[in-house]
Amino acid sequence: MFAINCIISAQDENPVIVVASEGSIKYIPSDGSKPIKVQAGTVVKSSGSLKIKGGSSAVLLSKGNFKTVKSEGTTQLSTAFQKTKAESATSFDPDFADYIQSSTALIASKQGVDGWVLGKSINGDGWLAVDPLRSKDGWLAVDPLRSKDGWGAVDPLRSKDGWGDKKPMVENTLPFGKLRETTVPCACAAIPEGKTCTVEILDGDQVVQTTECCQNGQCTIDLKKLKLKKNFRYAWRQKLGTGENALTQSVNFMVLANEDYMNILKRVRTSKVYLGGNPSVKGMMEAAAFEQAQLYTEAETIYNRLLDENPKDKMLQINKAALLLRINNEAKAMKVMTK
Image (cartoon, rainbow, N blue to C red):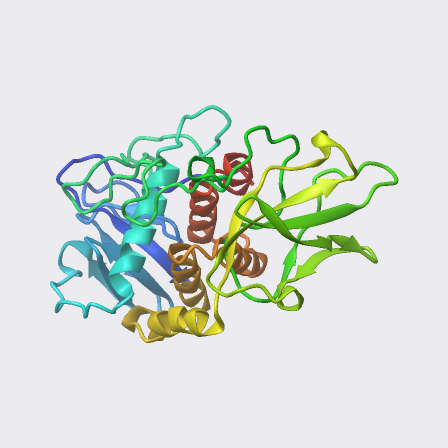
């Protein structure tokens, strides 16, 4: 069972998010209540302080600014985030700050929603939920249906622009968004006995290529072999056997040029936070950049790898679940948060 560690209640508070942590760290509330063990994903009030043991460290975020704390002793959070110099227009750090704040608020907004188990709210004991719609203190107002800030929900079918099907019969399990020219999964949701699963690639309403999906027990497609145009929007669907009911709905995709992919990574890997971050922070930053660039499959793959290595990291769980919510996969997001 998962719980978002939040102790935010006052509107004038600037919440502090623990983005990553290593070792023994405790939060000391300013009201004299008992200390709280801190881990990645914890959200605390800036009025308190952190007590860090030797060899421990934490990456913190508040008001859009990051702070790495490594020194043994007590850090007063209200003075820890000094005003920094303006970031360059190409810096990824401000985008990453927005991403972390937006994801945390989005998941916190699920507190008490049917089916979501985020833990009890125990007053004064580190388990109060964050109001996701607060904006006075730097939090992004997260509306799952908005996309203007880059972190809104994505409709993989996008039927309003003529690329979706009017009567989808079977769920499409193909990836959507932008994809690298590599091997991608294409497992069919349900293959009728004795039938094969093929994938139809469309340019507008015209089928331009058909390829087998599951061959020799492997349900993958090598995009490199298909030789599709780079940065050109296609749609694809799966076909299970024959007949009208055999077709899944179509989802859009685009094969990204390798140069564009490397430019995304270059921007992230030259940021100050990335250069000073641990593997978890670096992975989250790359995943955030990929999601921002609509490389949703790449972003989820990174979170899967990081969570295999650190299954109890709450910040990773929050970010992965928020990604899944933004691409309209609430059922899968719920499983991430309720493990």
